[in-house]
Image (cartoon, rainbow, N blue to C red):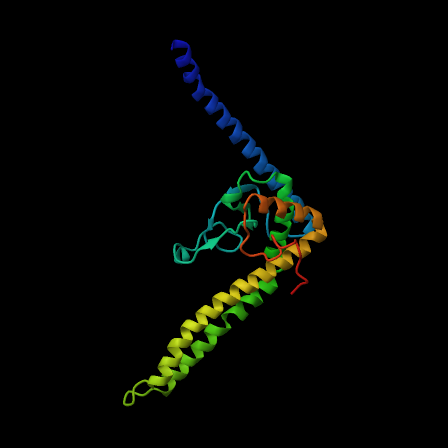
Length: 235
């Protein structure tokens, strides 16, 4: 019994050592990801990001441009997520989804970093135009409400039919806006994947996507992902 007890008492020390080694390997891997991100940024000629560290997270705070300062008004109200298979960049950090921590080797992040950087920087103008397009249903419904109040008078009140139409239209506008936002974001991310293959190669991206599929890491945005690796023709 004394020998068995001594054997099991030594185990915690082994666990602590394994934990320390795992932490060291994780830190080294994260620095490799930062190095690769810097290489891709230089290759793409991007000047808006200068990452020095990696953070693993599922939700992003809203920050001011080129700053880590958060926007208090949006905190806890509007949430942004880090989609599986994608990377998000602040001025000095690479933000990666928690669900993918330790699942890929540092070099396997290169195609995903390239695609995400293209999406964040090279396709920014299209994303801005997309915001205008996606907002169109709500803007149109807002004009309907203005028209409703314009024809209303204290004596006659608010026309019931117009009120019902605008009220129903409001819900329809938000539903359509959500659908269009999802569709447009997916199209842009597929376009980013297509452009990324010009820098890292189609095979490199295909191998990573295949590994993600095998690990059960589903990307909610990409039709190309897990669908024969067919790439979008462009927007």
